[in-house]
Length: 438
Ligand SMILES: Nc1ncnc2c1ncn2[C@@H]1O[C@H](COP(=O)(O)OP(=O)(O)OP(=O)(O)O)[C@@H](O)[C@H]1O
Ligand SMILES: [Mg+2]
Image (cartoon, rainbow, N blue to C red; front, side, top):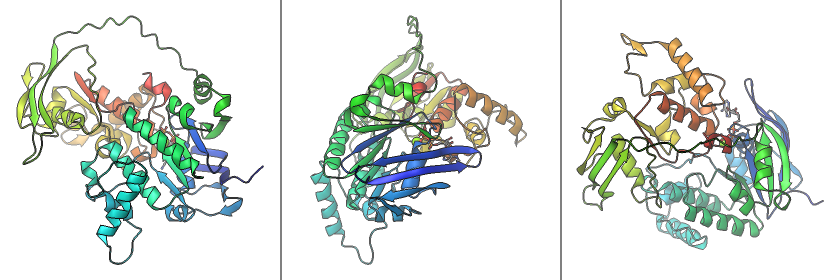
């Protein structure tokens, strides 16, 4: 047997009492696309963060082409030509594409023209249509991801680790990414790909590794398996067909009425132009479209984070067009943002504090300015249980949860406020097959 390109041997990683990885051994060859599957909290991200030097393994070894290597930081990983695109991007939003890509990789005086040209050419070569002079904050999530990939290509990586790269992409963007992955691996590079989407796995992977509770639970070639078998391998209890029954929901009165909603930043093209719609009670209203066409702005205007230039928004017949965000929350608008790290939670606060974020002014939790922490923790525990959030308890920090479990906690918090209307932007981002069914 030939020596693997990269190999992990008997890796274990503990966070206090939590066993994130136990005795994990896996390898990837040149030219191979390896998919890493598993439920929320199974240990996928942790294992790859060890390979990328973000975490140190407590036990185990890493090899490149048969030789033992030590990876203590991402800089070490980059020296071995390993690059990782995180589940949550790590770009500086006020900087341009070029600045982000060369950040940390330049010394002395920078020739911006030359840097921009090199990166623009790189983008063209891989069919990525991004303007390298734009600021990250002006790019859609799909474009930001291209920047992340470009950054890896710029560093000439041979092993690309992608943590849920398709979670927020449109079908077209996903096709492009899959094409890129195939091309890139065909050139003798390797890709490790974490995902919850079995269709993509069956499309692009050569081999699939399934993790369960921190351990390797299966290692199969694509030809030898199918979606059904993979989901059985992933999930400890099989997914019961949800008995949805007959859909008896009937559209009731109008809950939200939007008329002529327009947002035009000064001297710029409209972000929203004369948008009209009604949503009735009992309805699920879907908004689709290629990212960057105003969906994000529409949701932000509805929840109060962006001011409309003209038009009106009525919630239960009350005009909320000019009300503050907080007022809208009390009137019954819940919000699940697409970027959970930036807008969903404060990562350095614990879960019960995060629960409290939106309800802090409610009499229920604070009496004379003093927070009833005990009650808050109890309610948080109940929410964690109800939404099947895998966490040590209400005092665990938000950042200690796996990505999917953070998402479940946000959804739980929003539901706990019993809103009349929930605006959910990419709500199933990073949820495993079991959780999406909810
Ligand atoms: N920094 C940390 N501190 C404490 N516990 C952590 C930390 N990072 C991860 N964990 C725990 O390790 C376990 C594995 O988490 P990991 O993020 O690897 O899961 P995952 O398979 O990537 O899940 P998801 O599909 O939800 O992203 C979880 O129980 C998580 O709570
Ligand atoms: Mg993860």
